[in-house]
Length: 256
Image (cartoon, rainbow, N blue to C red; front, top):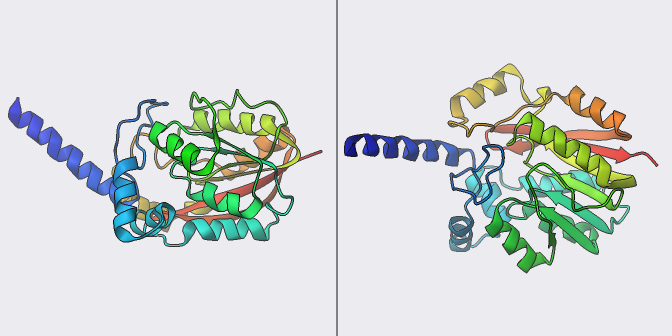
């Protein structure tokens, strides 16, 4: 039994090393949703960022993901597309995690209310304490506490490529529901745009062992057609770095 236990431990350690190469680590969440319980570890990430003299976001981008400046480049693209020009007063973010997109979003538009839905309790508590956001109770696929048509900007970054298809599409319906007419919806997914044969080969060779649902692909057309039925029109799309490859950021506007 001891030998078997040691063998299992070695396998788990190997899997963790592979995952870290793509910017992930394995920790046990207190709120397991759909089998997805792999989060960027809170204490270890905080310590490593401080030791490196980096902000948490810059540490995750540059050291953990190997994509320095990735978060800022996405924010810059969104700014150029006019996402922040309407000065959204209410923002909602699904799965903000470490808050690296949240922090930069708040600098761009200074919303009066910023709601988050985050299943990793340590990160949620940190974001509430640091940025004064409102952490809503979450079941991992619903935005039920948020009223219909009450949010100017709904966003999710590096979320829908880590969850199952059903979790993603259930959130899509909810995102359209809570967005006010004229508001924006921003999220990224690993579409066919990001999955040419060469990239698929990179994932197969360097993508680690995955964790049940990561990396998850979703057809672009499925997203565009679904949101069209929900009264949301695609305004723009662009690719952004994600670990060993890329993801596509889609920007929708809800029709008045």
